[in-house]
Length: 117
Image: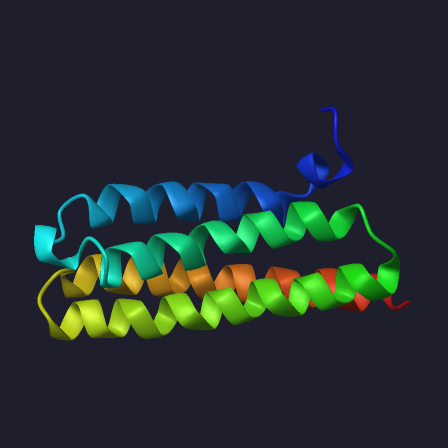
């Protein structure tokens, strides 16, 4: 692979998660296009974007980008909870996506710890 971040499993899982979100939000009501759909898509994409951008920076800056990526994960959790309450996502899909977010968060925490050693 051409770029260092492309060797990170967490980066690939983040890209896969964003793809899952795009597939899910295609089923959201059209009147949510500029609401939950847009917010969830931007937050999901932001995870992998911050991993890739941060990897080109100093360790200190990369650590900050990892924190921003984790913030985007938390944002996704909230939007997914609202989407569940609105009936835009079923419980099974919600649980699956939440598990993926938990894994991503743990992986980012591990990456940050490994950088500080």
